[in-house]
View 1 (cartoon, one colour):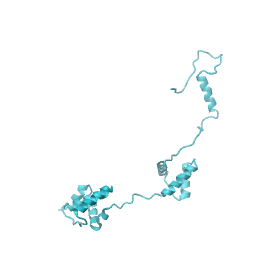
View 2 (cartoon, one colour):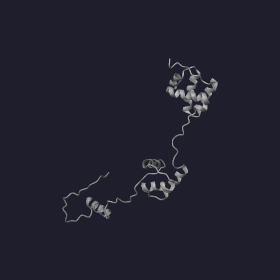
View 3 (spheres, rainbow, N blue to C red):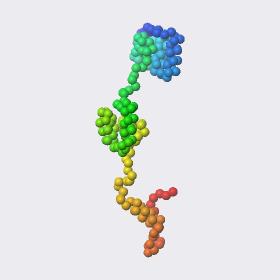
View 4 (cartoon, one colour):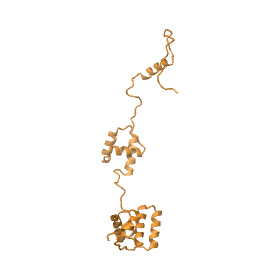
Length: 188
């Protein structure tokens, strides 16, 4: 029978010590380690690898890997060894320096920002990722426009003239009095 084969478990800890290790891992918020130690506890109770793995929700190959790691190195063998992802291209100090440079020399175009990073730090970022990192730092791309570039030079004079016409100010006496002024816009 395939699933009934028992696995020899090296008892690195007594049952009470294993319970204490589970409690310590829970207090330290090491959820991955807690799950693996519960797997070992199931093995201590006489369950097969497959049963112990199913009790904590892992596959048979994972349970075999955890059992081998326990037998070889005890608790340290069960500790997760993932690094947490790729290290950042810029150190936190370099990123802070970069953000300070951006704040001092505003405004910047996205292309200028990419060129600055590449020349000063020798690294490149994908434009989407760089925008995400800048937003996380509290910075946002914006187009600094004090005026709409499409507006005519005398836009304020045109607006004042239209408003005076709309409200009936400065009307000539020779205009028809029965003509209603046309008012466009939303007023509250």
